[in-house]
Image (tube, rainbow, N blue to C red; front, top):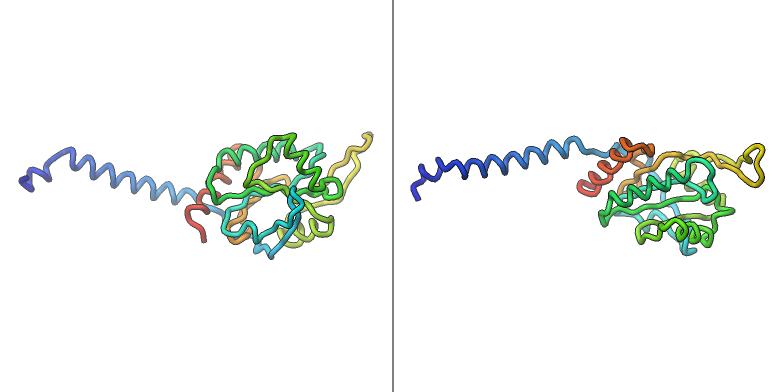
Length: 206
């Protein structure tokens, strides 16, 4: 084939321009996607999962982690947090992403109670663990190591047997080294930012 005629072929140039354009678009899309810089270097930690087995940071390393802090009888923010976690689980099917929910009410939320909560709310996923322990262990992991707020049990006025426990109302992103990378509210804008950050970490681990 004549080289000059080949180079003048409009379909060839359309193909080349298309390929180059795709690479440019992908490059700038990656620039817009990012994950927050590490906020907390979290020391090694360990709790108990819903199957009454030891479970901790070492079981999660090399995975991006999305975490919530809750308790099963929470009368305020926890149902919304759990729904947000379910949405994130659907939006992030990547193999290298794990989900954890740590109770701030370990006296009530025993492994057995957590299993009942999981069954009731259809949350039995292989990559989503619900964690408990002694109050001392929970406080050490959540407050001392992760630097996450967790308050004391407060009885709600004019109610019988209803109480609240002040705690983190945001969803937390950890990277593959267990470092805390960001705190995200449960509105659609922030959940989308969390999804972008998690996918970025999966594609470009530090």
